[in-house]
Amino acid sequence: MLPISEIFYSIQGEGLHAGRPSVFIRLYYCNLYCSWCDSKYTWENQAKAKEGIDYFLVDDSSLFKIISNYKSKNIVITGGEPLIHQSYLINTLKSLKERGYRIEIETNGTVMPKEELIQLVDLFTVSPKLSNSNVKYEHRIKPAVLSFFSSLENSVFKFVIVSNEDIEEVLSLIKEFKISNEKVMLMPEGTDLETLVKRSIWLVEICKEHNFRYSPRIHIMLWGNKRGF
Ligand code: SF4
Image (cartoon, rainbow, N blue to C red; front, side, top):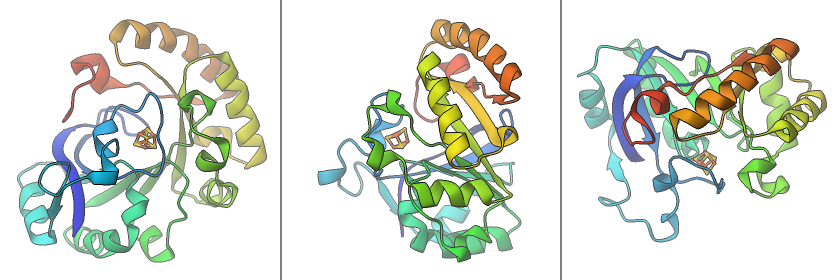
């Protein structure tokens, strides 16, 4: 069974399909520790996490029952780091595909996906962490995994940006891992409207310059930094 932090129905707030109504399945546990993480409740207590408090173990039939209440057939598997659970995820995703769902996975790009899983996923949104995350380089950058996702047709890369130094880092990473500019999205870091708007105005110009895509954070802009939106 999958350790689920929360399931909720909203619009996708970020990335390639921002604005699309989606069912979010947020899995518990993460292998990183980003200082600005907006879902710390999926990992901060993970060393002594308890079922029923920090996460819920949900079997497939209960999961299908919950998500069938929602209109959208677009599922976003997020976390935490969902690929930690990929061995368990494969069966669940197979059943979801049989029921006609479209599957997106959001990953931090540190875990190599298995071939069986790749076949089931419509879009991987890979979000490699930069130094602004305060995570050690060797923990956040896994060259073989990033090169693999770079070559995968149905992947996009989303970077969280705070400052100009981050842009230099993105340029260096995309060069090193041969990531096409058209796959790259830049998203402002920020958990309040004022910061997001200020950084967005600056970031849009950078996107125009490099032919990157700009990613909003609609959920933060509309509801602030709250769970379940
Ligand atoms: S990888 Fe994602 S979930 Fe994990 S700590 Fe970083 S931002 Fe949070």
